[in-house]
Length: 559
Image 1 (tube, rainbow, N blue to C red):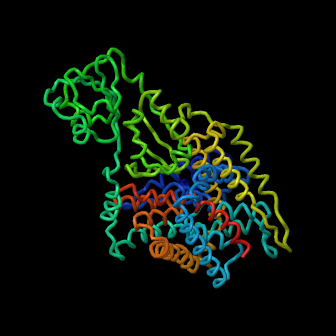
Image 2 (image 1 turned 90 degrees about the horizontal axis):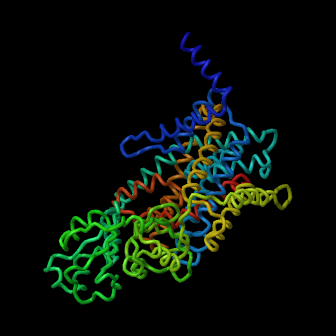
């Protein structure tokens, strides 16, 4: 009795402290999401959903305001992130990934509609079924917001809150297999088809004439003096072929002046100084053979910086890293390439696309020189353009208010479509005019992540009240429907990608995980291939999938 009364008192405290309750749910969700069973973990989204379901069972609820705020932050950030790639990729080979995402979305949508008709599912349930089966948070957010905003009218005597509850509970019931099933299928499918992903990834990487992707780490700037006479007998071209790793920056200083890269085609001389920017291992394994390290009069650190360069210039888009020859032509070290917040392989034949971000280390003037060549240099990346961000969300909400009445239907973008559209446009304009709409990657991540988890906490709390009752009545059949919505789009997407689009299996599996917006499934493919190559397929499909599945979340409620 004492334990029960203490638990009741704790619940009373939490009921009286909504901020405390919210952040307990978020913290508990992250802890649950980090629990690993073998190589499988739920992740923070599922963790927060479970934490919300638990407290929702004890009659906790979230008010509409905080959940709507999380929804707005999440959907707008999704659009902003996709903006640069969304419009650019249609003009490139990315059209294949658009078609892949479209086929996966249409197949999942069709399966959810068929299941809802065959099983006579309650109003709102198809939206949760589609969102859970495809593990798509944008779909869930769009479906619930379409009901809450009045875009979708509940039938008969059913209230909007009850219909939203149907969306939430069906999502919670189908999401777990959606996540675990997707990972299992992605892991087993190559084995069933007899595909050696690791071997295929190596074949794909071997197409790069300059070898595998480099991963510079622990970058350091040092100076060495040539004291090894044997080195001076080797032609510079042979030295470059034998000792240069094709990413590190090496400058030769002779008689007090830096020699241009093309001027050392002869031989190095005793006393020449090598100014080198490279990973620490490069010095110990290679450069130590050339001579002795010397201590400069002033710290070399003051002459170098780390900066991010956003690819914007048309003349750089479509160029490979080999064509740019960043280390030799610009004297900076490329340490990372990211696309859609995802690290991608920086092989020599990797082609740049609008919105890609190059992280480089080098002298200030050299960084500026590369910036003029490819796009815009981001140095003071801590500041966010809050004016554009605030008015962007406001404009998105206004766009969502416009609708056209066709009979008894009110057709419009809704809040989800309006916010997504505003985010896409502002993200694209930011790529064209880099001084406009600054939203640094770290700021975008916290807004997107916090917005999603805030929204998901509300979903869990709302579904927790009646999930047991729903599962007892329609749960088993709903689970079977969810399995179909998860499994069939993967199989159809793979067949379409291989037979029609002719996408390499490594890239295709990455593209399928992107089409279902599942970063957890991508990590499984990446681990199986022991390569970051699948991330190219993931980023190709992810931008389109977010848009398509957001729209699908509203449309499915009309069916």
